[in-house]
Image 1: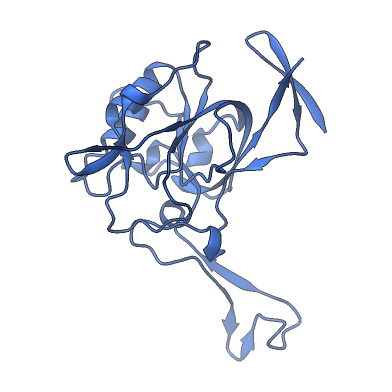
Image 2 (image 1 turned 135 degrees about the vertical axis):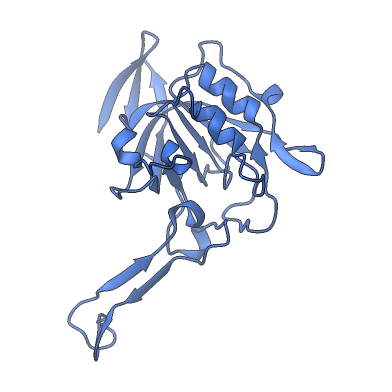
Length: 246
């Protein structure tokens, strides 16, 4: 199926049958990153007394239970409820799942023993950013296991600038936009959501995005799929589509 969508008055053709999947796979150790000291995703048959929900074990059906942590086990999208005492739910605030996204790679800089993405390296396209922006930390391994490693993060000034430019949805391959141990400051999260004084309630952050190494920088059409789980963060599947001007 093909659709035609305009951007700044220019029509583009998009082939929806050729998606670029930018997600991890929960339960597949070869495609499942981890952080925040959580256990790997567990998928196992339910046991009820002497009955085991496994066809291999003699049951008529497979009846498996899944245990995961959306923040620590893979690609996930979160809302400001991640840092709000009200425990806001993502799918109460995410109002769009389709749109234009600009993707770029930024070098990881070293500063005071930390590694981070800097505002000075951000490249704003001539026509400005769309509502979705994808930022990859160049060279970061995927899937990667980041607990107790002080992984790279995004400086708060960069997230603040994205908010000022009207970016509503930030996607990154980092395990978090913030430093692993920052004393609870969460400066980048707060800067992007402008929390708590001018909270951008419909904005989201997607972390552990699996951008393919072959993905070229530039504009794409995006379908951000999110699981219907009533939580501040949920497993997600960003799908990018190439666009051809008409």
